[in-house]
Length: 180
Image (cartoon, rainbow, N blue to C red; front, side, top):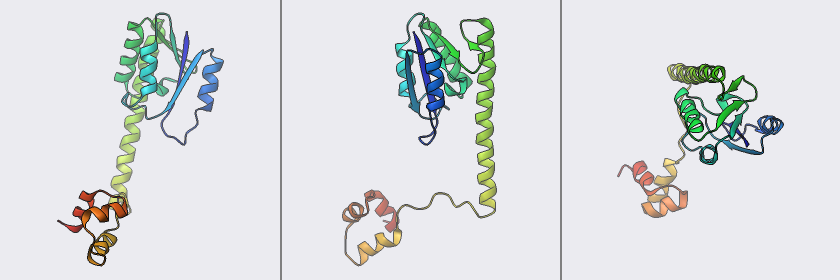
């Protein structure tokens, strides 16, 4: 059986192109999820597929980076497939783990996918450091209006539990704002 797997990182990204490519590749079953590929944690659809794979089944993705962004995760997935008698194929890359050349190419692409992720992370951290140095980056805006917390206590005489309920925040957050 040919089983397709599509993945994008964020909810505003579109899966359509991947889904169409997997159907065109002859996948009888196609599953998708919108979750980061930097780790296998939280990827319940992928885990379900890996649990379902049987002897002779083929997991098909459009590109290796849709499956994993870490060479370790990629190798673990391929080992799991192999142990269950399955294989991996990519529609846009010459990857077919049933051949020696396909396995070698898969490892090379996995290294580059991980390298790309690490470069992106480094650029992001450099940008944040530069913005902080320029006084532009202040971090996330506070979600709790400290003045309103104090007003509710001082003017309306509310306690921490009632303030928390009214503002939809945790009681510990109220105590933190009030310095108690």
